[in-house]
Length: 438
Image 1: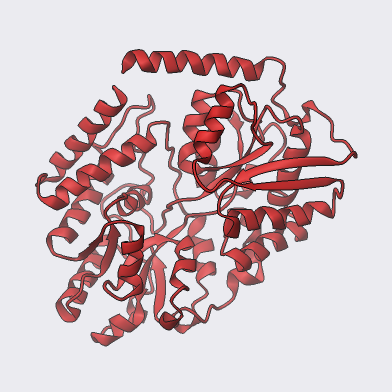
Image 2: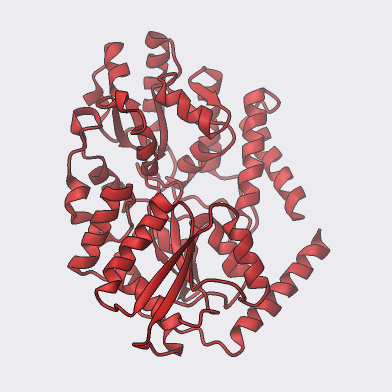
């Protein structure tokens, strides 16, 4: 394994040199032209990411009508296609691509010089939610344009709380995890059902808990670090809820959705992008409410805010239209103008896509009441507020392997093989080291 990693490292250096030679990284390496130009963008989910790009293209067309934005939907395997292009020195790659935030660090590290430094191109990153900027930063260079937030909250069925004699208004506030666990105990005792729906095939609940404290899962040298107070506390909470029967454990996305949409559980913790899924059940209108993510007790830096998911845009150094590609992203996603703020307002309403460009939060759709939710709660206004409080988490290239190892260890804890938090951490660490060769 170590020999393989050495080969991979050497390959990465050679690929990086291929990008560096003959290609200037700065956006101004090629002047913009008034000639007809086509910018190709790769992303996925045409109803969300694709919709947003098309709306951005409409804004840009008013500035540069000679530029056409060709959006290409890559429904599966976009990272593999990009990696193949990078290994071929940029051949076949688009001008711009969308990356999930937890994926980008391994591309930046493994393919130096592959992306345009957008900080050098003049993007003002102080105007974005700062937790988004961390993963796209390498030294003094910043490579991405932040897109959507995965700002999280605690979702609760107000009608189910009322049915057991509780007042939903009592829980519309910042709470700690012990307070929420106490609520879950009451829900189980009086209603007979577990409160929390969780998907056992991912680590979303664990990830949300840890990120709410700003705790990193890796050390500065890139090695895994699960022996932290935040990790231990998160696993302690999860183990307690499992042992007390407070978790509705669903296996897989569809089963998890069915659990809360059908009322098998009265709540869950997740990002705002779940709103579209909730609204597929019109019969639940007026029943759901969302409150701040519970905070961890006794952990430095703990907040009532966290994140799960989100993506950002990147320009490849191999692009023959770098200047235009960069200008397109800057002018439509990163410039504080009425047109840009209205663009963000439009994609929020049209696709539920909440951007992380802070000046856009004053749009009417951000503050509007939403009749689908309990007492017409203006849910986007809440998420916009929480978004600015999310701590930064650096994912590192080892993040995907960590996710699998922690997921498997938590499953073993649920099954009773690991009876303590310490055993769970040791099991996850051992599995990670076996996979990565560390």
